[in-house]
Length: 191
Image (cartoon, rainbow, N blue to C red; front, side):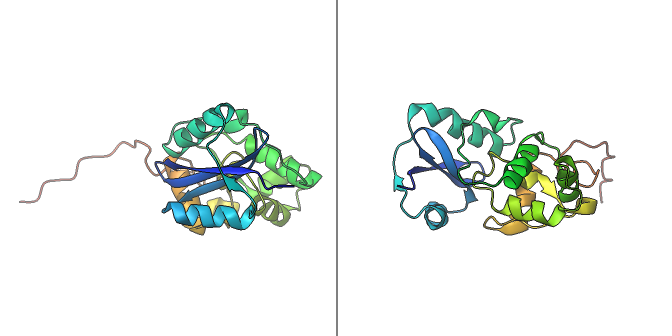
């Protein structure tokens, strides 16, 4: 069976990609600085995928991902995805992760507790590293205990994760998001 069709598209954070089969998304590529890098990374995961214009039914998915990358508080749960041969554990982890709202985060341990396996924080991290459809399943919103970044398997690793969280103005470790408006006094002028 073919790995489907793919398209690359520009966002505020770089070139992203979607892979689909029969109008359902089977893979997504987080932003890369260059289209060639996005294409190469996507084709490592879906080597038989062929470039194509997306069908009209997937245009809202592209628009939604663009909006998210521009910092708009959008829920991408409307995008049809096929998680293929995912295990029950992965599906439960991804379901909890999909419910994390824009600008919010959970820890790996909190996700593990929510799926009823409080000792499985490391396994949650592994499942998130195997997420085929980031940011539709927003694995970047899951952090290490104490608000630490934890891991991230996308290009740019933790820097990409933190950039996505910054765009979302996410609270990390209970602290206000990087760009949230905070009261402050104007700095005195130097003479």
